[in-house]
Length: 93
Image 1 (cartoon, rainbow, N blue to C red):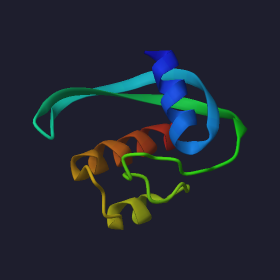
Image 2 (image 1 turned 90 degrees about the vertical axis):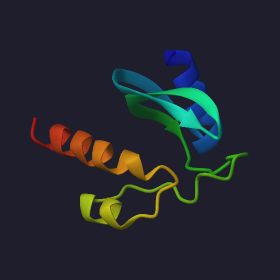
Image 3 (image 1 turned 45 degrees about the vertical axis):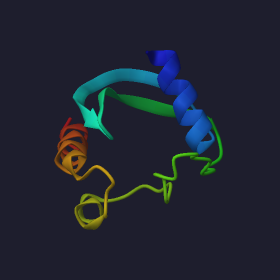
């Protein structure tokens, strides 16, 4: 699973990453297909931001504050609270 994450991040963003740890697994149905999405904490080790998303779900690569995340239009809005929770947990360490 780690290698899949590294490949996907590189293919869609241009960044090479190292896995720090797995954070969460989300299961559900997307477009009528059962899916399992794995969330990882990663560290960027090299590369430059470059959107190359064949599904056209990535509109921007940028660091966002919690306030900005709360205002974003997301393709998967159910992820908003999870992202904010993970950021808060990381900031409070």
